[in-house]
Amino acid sequence: MMHYEVVGRADAAETVLLSSGLGGAGAFWQPQLAALSERYRVVLYDQRGTGRNTEPLPDGYSIGAMADDVIEILDHLDVARCAFVGHALGGIVGLDLALRYPNRLTSLVPVNAWAKTDGHTAMCFAVRKDLLLHVGPAAYVRAQPIFLYPAPWLSQNAERLAREEAHGIAHFQGADTLLKRIGALLAFDVSARLGEITVPTLVAASRDDILVPWTASERLADGIPTARLWVTPEGGHGFTVTEPEIFNAALLRFLDEAA
Image 1: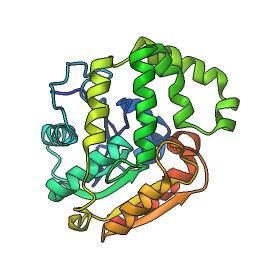
Image 2: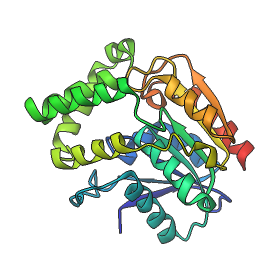
Image 3: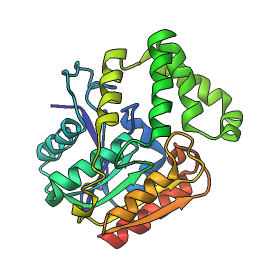
Image 4: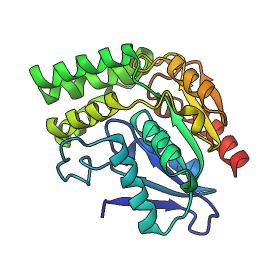
């Protein structure tokens, strides 16, 4: 069984499950935990192959397999339905769940996610793969914040980023695992099936995201009949970290309405 954590109100009527992006670590959601834990039971987990779930990934590992991992966690917790919040790769895991297991979701929040990888995003991942394969994991980890956060935030948080870089290098998920996970997200394409999604959905994005154009979220919201789009003007790809108060307020409003 995969490692996961449950925090917040044990007596809450609703469970919120948080799924992170390519890094895979449940700790990514630390800026959301206090706000969510006041009202909800919150589940967070390290994705398979990352963090405390370090088993090697099989060849052909897919977004569908990542979604099945979520179902395994819900079943282990005896949770029939949950609100699912996913960032980037985690968001496309949520889309797969909404298509294959709609009865397990009360609502869906894909954050800076996509139905099909944008050409610009594919180019960014190609550069990151080149760094990994031809320079090494340390260079990959060192470059990662450039894709995640706005330049002013990077400048103001140099000490924090140095600590995160050291942690990221020490706990790197491994090149083989990372390449399989990148391959899975690049292969994902549900652009022709968005109209089948019936789960109440908040598509969240940042206009200054340099990894995933906010227009990818606009296309998601346009294609999902039950979706609405919420765009914040700044914060970068990781705006849940750089602008947590703004995101948390929008997330709580949506979860309250969906419930």
